Length: 223
Image: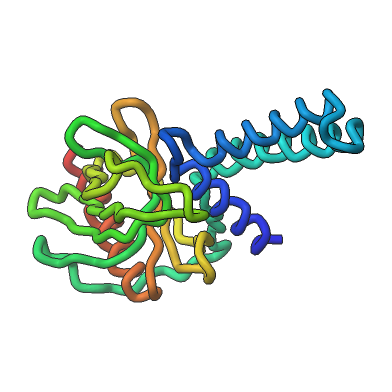
């Protein structure tokens, strides 16, 4: 069931992220379904009633999927019931860069956009501010759809220790295999924002987890 859900969420993300003639692919798919239903009602398509029912069912299913996937940031995060307490690790230096994948609301040059599972890196500056730096590459989907040029390039998520409200260890599913991950809930100007960070291995997750925990504790003491 998780595999099917993961596949549907990722499909919904790709359809909403890639465009053809200026419109997302999921809009074109909806338009095609409405067109088929219209032709069926005019008798152009055989089996009018059955076709209309089938098309309406698919259309409603796509709408529910899009809403469900978007609410979950197009990823499946499963919190660990009894996460192991990370052991002591060396603090991250400002020059350290932890490679990972990131999901959340990114910003750059006054623009903001949601992305899921972007290749990124995590850093903590000497000021204790954290940053997730991600790259959005050009991409195609189903031959027709392309990523808008306005979204291609570097994007960032910045947050300070005092903004971190909650940290949760878990597993994230988006690609072919589950990845160790953590979820950070942060207080932003527009409300709470959730950032998901997934890692190639548990050791890298432990380094970021320990760093966030250490600095969050320092941030609370400084208030």
